[in-house]
Image 1 (cartoon, rainbow, N blue to C red):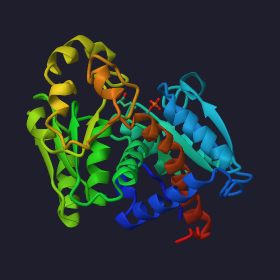
Image 2 (cartoon, rainbow, N blue to C red; image 1 turned 45 degrees about the horizontal axis):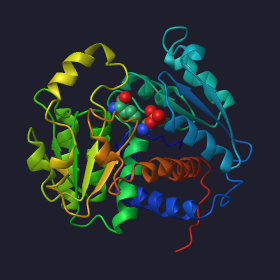
Image 3 (cartoon, rainbow, N blue to C red; image 1 turned 90 degrees about the horizontal axis):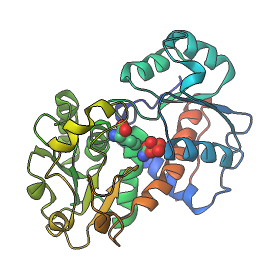
Length: 315
Ligand code: CP
Ligand code: NVA
C-alpha cells in the first residue's frame, strides 16, 4: 500500500525515529544510496514560492539518483484549470512521488486521496511536516537527546507551530508556546498534540506571555508574523505581534546554552533581532541544511513502503 506524508499523523513515533537514524547516515555521505531513486521521477507541484523546500528536494532527489520536475503556480493551476482529482490521477501515470506546496490543506489531502503514488506535503495553510521533522532532528543533533529539553515557540500559531507541536509530542520534546490573543494554534490540532504528548510524557503549554514561555528554554523558535497568502493582513499583524519579538531581553531568560531556530525566510527587526539570529546561539543554516538530509530519508521511507524493500542502516 502506498504511504503519504501529509501530516505527522501519517508516521508512528517508531517510524519517525527510524527516519532520524537514516537521516544521520545520509548526512555522513552524499553518495550513500546514490542509486536508490534510479529511474524514479518526483514531481514538485508548487502553488507558492520556495527556496529551501524546492532546492533541498531537487538536490536530494538527484543525490539519490532520481529525476525531478518542478511544476510552478502557472503550470498546473491546481483546482482551477483542472480538478485536483484529475491532476492526481494523471500525475500518478508519469511520476513516482508528488511533493505539493499548496494554499489549502484540502488540496494536498485531495491529491493524496486520488493519487496512486506517495504524496508529500511541502507546506499548506495548516501544516509544514518536512520542516518540523527537520527541526526536531536538528534539536536532537545539537543536544544528543530530547529528554528534559524544552522548545519555546514564540509568535503565530500557524502551520509551522502545528507541525512542531505534533513532532515534539510524538518524539518527546516539551513545548511552550506564546502567541498574541487570537493567534493561538488550532484547537483540534492542539488537543491531538496534547494527547500524543501525554503518551510520551511531555507537555505542551500555550500562553500569551513570551517571557514565561522562554524561561529556562533550551530552544527558542520563531517564524514570520505574516505567512504566505496573508499579505493583506500585514499592517494589522505587525501591530498585533508587538511584544513578541525575539531579542536580547527575551533570550536572556532562556537556558544559557539555548539555541535559536527559525524555519526561514526571516525578517530581521520584526520577529527576531539581528543580534539574536546572527549570534553564536543561532543554528538556522544547519537547520536549513538538514532539510536536505531529512527529506532524502522521508523519500526513501515512503518509496520503500511501496516496493516493500527494507532499508538497512548501519547500527
Ligand atoms: N522553510 C521553508 O520551507 O522555506 P521555503 O519557503 O523557502 O521553502
Ligand atoms: N509560516 C510560513 C512558513 C514559511 C516556510 C508560511 O507559511 O509562509
